[in-house]
Length: 533
Image 1 (cartoon, one colour):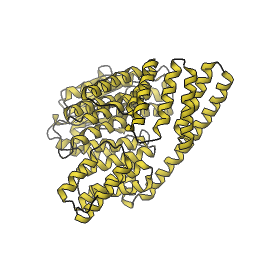
Image 2 (cartoon, helix red, strand yellow; image 1 turned 60 degrees about the horizontal axis):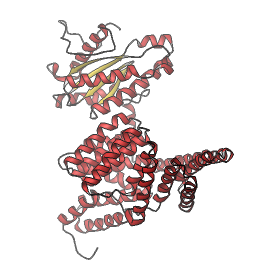
Image 3 (cartoon, helix red, strand yellow; image 1 turned 135 degrees about the horizontal axis):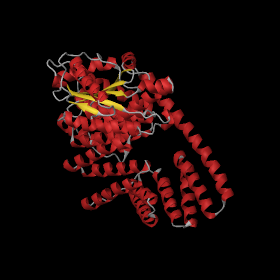
């Protein structure tokens, strides 16, 4: 930039424009962020300075300098927490999630994505409202819960439409289609891709090569090989027309084209596309794409009837894949080491505190966490719902099979409860109270809606494939549900007692059910004061 000194208002506007954009040119965005950082330093405005630094760190992370970026991002996050800057905290959680994704820790990615959404308020831009919810959907999918991710994708899609974030809507639909595609949900992927193409047509957008590659892959999996070839020809043409500045992408596009051609029996043209992709992979050291080139080459040999060559190439594919996994593990280990080295004493103490608030068997929150977090929720949320879930006939599982089997059952139930609650009440939590008993906390939820949602979770537990764990023994749960405002004065013990009373009613009336609204007994019964069931 020239010698013009930007005012605080001009700098703030420039930062918003940089923060709320779909990044196509990483180097240019990094240079712009560094320049804005210089202007902020000249103004002496610390708030604008850390925002510019976060933009620069985010670009640095995407160039592969993970260590430097991670240190800068964590320092900015600490500043945002100390200064109570919710908007900046939401952004730093997004950036921290990116670091965790590169470290291979999808669970931490999900935690940061949830925090990034929870911190959104009226100061958040329209772009943030959509982008942060999109990231939460992606994080849920990466944690193996595509069913839980779909409502979040739908929410991001609807919000993008309402807020007229048309370019971002293209990203939402492309990423959703890709998630369905990678999950093997090809008909669903085709439906989302159709909405993506319709949106682009309606808004006069020309889809970029990345989106076209996603669509081409989906068309291949749905047997639309000729259409996929047309899509990939357009993808490659737009790449050459300058729609993408990432030279690494062409190898990917050529590989997708090869798959489309193989589906049509154009085997000579398949080989040409594979040779071009392989050359780019070798030249640019694209190890992940090269693994899939070997796999496609083996498929081509088999299609030609040269099974000996196909077998040899398959061996090369397996060796390359294992080498790639080794590289990824090493890279993730290096990232984790950097993160460990940058952790301050306070962060270490927080980590130990977090461990103390987790159940070591299931990984869920524990009774200590519940005792710390539930009372303020009851005080501040008039629509809070508390539920207690208990495994039916759990003693029989332990006695008939083994305690190890019982532990496996508890671990799996914990996953099902957490997944189900994340889809229904992402601001709530699940905790193991002890033994086979769990508490589920649903903020801002009506009891009727909570009962419906929890009944879906109950069905998911009963319908899970337990045979490999418990053989012929079924596994079900009973759930008691209560509003926190059912008792006066409102307290944790009163809420849990009400939920426990309804749980007892569920057990007494046959188990494997959800019960709410049981009237109190004449003699108040404290929580846990009941016969074993």
